[in-house]
Image (cartoon, rainbow, N blue to C red; front, side, top):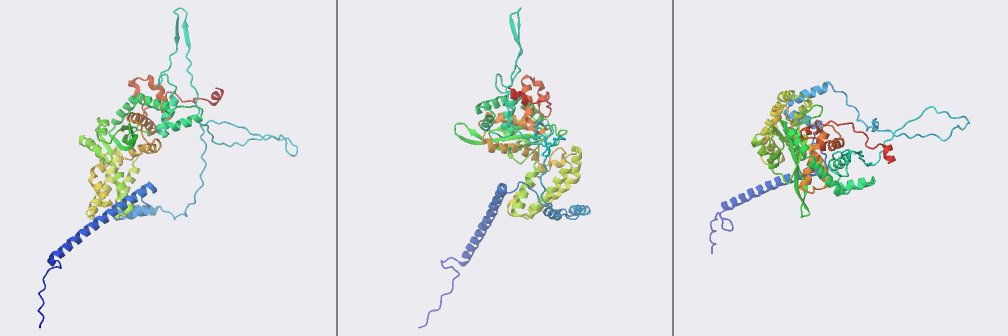
Length: 532
């Protein structure tokens, strides 16, 4: 018996599904898996970038600079002609490479000539030599050491003469000088000391209590807190005059930083912010005329800079924080920080090895090199140099970023850094059209560094009112330092003169106008203190 012929093969899979549909399903699955793999790879790269950035922030150096060889290579790729000219100039004046220098021993600095000298004489006990001959003094050897004593306190006694009139049967006495704190114990020097130690030296009040106790004086922390609060209130008109002066400039810096604020009744802290408004380093002669203003707020809302800058219509140098956008819509010219754009590109170059970002950083370095050369020039000369030298470099940078961005299909660190620069390009290059506008916002960022140090010491701000009063003190102290003054001498003089000063004369106590009323002498000469 013959076997039956085999049935014709059907174009179906084992489960009855046509093979073409099965293959399409496999293709769809492969494409889906490839997309998932690509997404995972991109996610892994982004996480590796964040880990590398955190490691650099925690363990690496804070400098964001390229070494000479790397920078030269990057310049060759974009500005070949400029790089060749620079190399030729360096070659003409080059000298044979010297041997590596050994570490030099530190040179002892001469002790300041203005410090008082306390002499201690030392003589030998013998008057005759071993041979029996009498010794004769032929000179002396003098050596100096630097010494100190802890903070010395003294009691300032106000002695007022009393006079009587036998005819009128009345008694008259000299009035007590007006004080910052009426009938209070602290004099102007002590108030200035507590304020400087708290705000400028970042010493919490409980530490100050311990320090002063070692000098034999117990000052409760609650008393010092009350003193600082009163001083903050009394100094408010002076801070308002400082704000008016700052808003009178055509170009300002602005930045903000978070601080911890104690939440009442909860025993926890919430995030508050301190804003800083800073004049540019281009204003003033011999470093005078600059100022900064701090503003403490309970949030980061844009209403706060709008309130402070209500009367300002110039150019604001800042980062691309959305809180400033309402100001731009109101007519304030935005000038974004080139250092922010550079930082994003530098991280992509250093952490991801992106040569695209590295070449962009090299071009930005060329812009900063030009800025260093014209730093001390007038605004007109600075503008001319920027138009002639900086603008071609900026145009080359923009063309490079635009062309390279089209080659990047995924939103990695390099693409995000380029997107930030290109989307904000008009504001990033505002400085090219105005010689009074800085290239970056570093002046404001440097102004908030004291707050970063303070956060590690006093940990949090006790209340909204305490933060506002601290901002007043910080504004005056940092502005005094900005103008080259000793902040303690400035505050002491302000505390002595402010109680009797009329409002129309407040301008003379502003840090950029301040001149001491009299030479500040030693408040307690050693002999007097020892006698008391």
